[in-house]
Image (cartoon, rainbow, N blue to C red; front, side, top):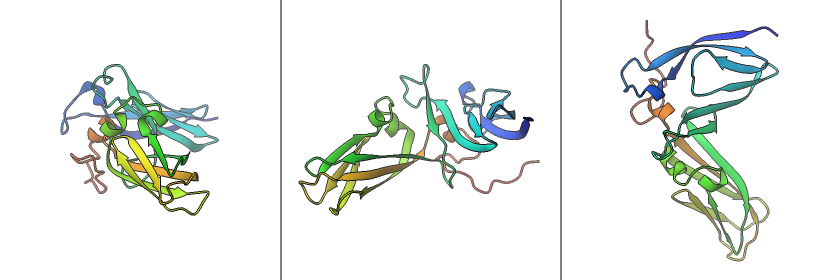
Length: 189
């Protein structure tokens, strides 16, 4: 199997703590070997290949909680979209018409991680096994699902989509000061 090279990929050098607007971008030479993409410098993420096609992409950044930022990192799968979103979802059975899902607990994150890492949060829920309407609310990192029928025990699909505001997004030259992607940046010479 030959090697595949990609050059000119920009990744923020967030560990050095250089401020926005400085020369905080580093260029990486990346190559694929044994279905894994490697970077010649620290990139903050890795991408796996499967039979020459992307199978999974991950983003690894400094942990957003101050108490863990010197000792831990946070890893999430990467979703390709028009904005840097994180998607959490699952299934839950209602008990007496209600269910609660703590997103930090459900996804093995430290308490407070979801709130610190996310903004512009949207939520959805659908009753998958019955006809009782359901709705949701979010209190911190806890999603509360309530059915119209207070005795309902149906299974509900839920999804929370939030925009990332971790250090990789916030320190990138490809985002503005609020972490929004600059979709049409000016070309650099």
